[in-house]
Image 1 (tube, rainbow, N blue to C red):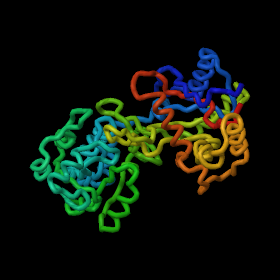
Image 2 (cartoon, rainbow, N blue to C red; image 1 turned 120 degrees about the vertical axis):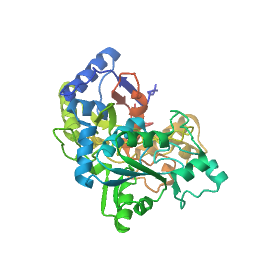
Image 3 (cartoon, rainbow, N blue to C red; image 1 turned 90 degrees about the vertical axis):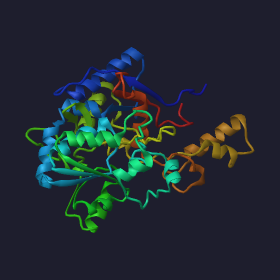
Image 4 (cartoon, rainbow, N blue to C red; image 1 turned 30 degrees about the horizontal axis):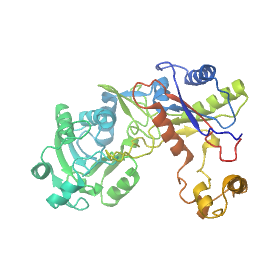
Length: 397
């Protein structure tokens, strides 16, 4: 009988990781112990993935609000800073904003609307329509925003982020002015020194601002790119991908991850004799259709992965073949015809109608999303994910 099980994703429990722990040994030992507990064997092209959080924790990649403030002060001169297009998040951005406010005399906070970049809404599109507001062109003052929309709270957190961010800034002894606009250049009417806090659109924002005459233009990815007074840092992403660790400290996105995944792959090969792919993952890349939140608040889904995870899927759409090429077949004849088609498929199916509808995304983004959903973000205690059969297809026995 043909094999009936396809892809399997398992959450693997691990010890609580502390700064200085050997993350390579912990991941390898945890997966090997899980195989004994779960009674599964290892195969070539299995996948081991670990959250970026445990890698960063093991690295001790932390920074304080004082470290952030010192870097902001050095790069912006301690005067007025335009802080534009941040996401609405107590976990992701609020503590960074504290450090930014501590390093400036005044902040002009430019919030995008009706939602932030990852889908957290200040107001609804319906409300914009009702009030006759054009989010592509209209720049609103705080007073005008309150006149039009009042004090709206986030549907899931119950927080009025406008009020929350303003209070946070003022509590740091920093003056604050808030505007609402989606064009990065709107802030230039208030200051020529700008910190771009958007994630995936940051390169465009910087380009537009520089072309429009801004004097200092930096992004969150330019803050804490090197150690400040012994702090952690990330040369590639700076503060992007950071999370709140304590009230005064952030955990940064992990750095130098390639050496970690390569070392884990090598050690797993020595233990199992199999070439197992390894990756570090953060947020998955998917959107919540109810809350409208796009999950990807990290700069990338995976900051490092082994070579076997490069590229995109190269798959045929089985229902397309069944409905078109082999519409006259059924049963075993259909099964064998489809298997033969898969075995004969080209190495590159881009543009082939038989691949239409397959997911056109990077493997690491797809696998990272699977891992993020498997491990969860709460108390599951499974920061390592072990995946089998991901690269199998209908012909695999």
